[in-house]
Length: 433
Image 1 (cartoon, rainbow, N blue to C red):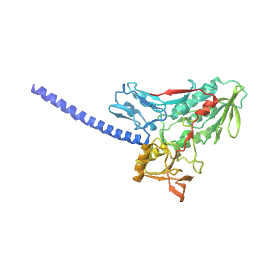
Image 2 (image 1 turned 180 degrees about the vertical axis):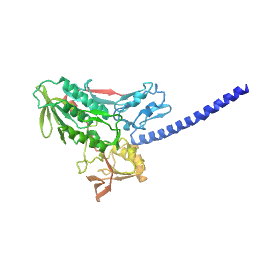
Image 3 (image 1 turned 30 degrees about the vertical axis):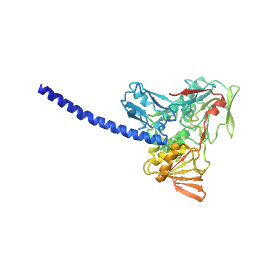
Image 4 (image 1 turned 135 degrees about the vertical axis):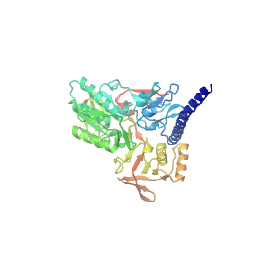
């Protein structure tokens, strides 16, 4: 009997010796995650603005498989025994979390939790309600580079397979020179379709002003003419350089800084109008990007790759001189998020004399960080010029030159949905619980 008791005690001690450290580590991780979640709630970055995981907590078993599977890191965490989306703004819709969940408690959805999103109606070939017009990439609900490339390729492959004789100048006109648009153009070139590409800003689309320092691609993608694109975690500058080489090799017909203003459907083909020309085309592929056209300042240097119009991952910016421009909640939240990071010098420039349209929560946070000298707010100021290592502001007391590594502009923008409705493309409202 004594031997049995001793055996049980030893077994219990061994279990405790193994389990106790495990639960301590678990509690420590959860405490870190909770702190991170609270910080992100301050900056507004806990909410997702594009495709992201929705977790059914009634089915979630808290195994942590989704957390380990996510290549972005710190997007998901286990809090109170359940998977929790803590850094929604960082998520770009890889979908690996959903694949890793053993109980199917995760699905990918669009828009913010508790809200709804307008998305264009498209079929399995990415064709809209207007026959002959296709939508690919982020505008159709996909924000991942690999998925955008795949959609661009498949849409043009379908166009090639269903193409008929016509009197238009082009077989396909592509609007947007981001990953989806460029993949569509490469496929068109490969299939001997006469194509033209219009880009309202510069080559790269969303990547050109990607709102974080690194771009993550979870697996290689196959591009016509070029071959396999084998990149994992790269800087956006490196990725843009690769795209330029791909464009040069394929000799794509791209017209940059040329925004499409009108699309009309007559006589079995489309007429596409820009400020510089009118062309006719049998098919159109729209790869515009879901966030629309950011309102630009129109100053020298704004085309530099260090300039972004959105911030989704403040943690990738440390030991940097950062300028945030704007007077709304997005600008204030970005400034606070950057100020939280290690050794950043953050300046917030606003053309007005005071912040009159921000939430009270953001006002309090800004006052706190200003008092701690973590954020320098300059009212009645405007950007005059952006240089490689500095920015020049005009202020009531004269010009001010600031050392600078990154610029974030929050001046509003024009969403593409009115353009789509004007063309006649039907939209659907996706409700998110």
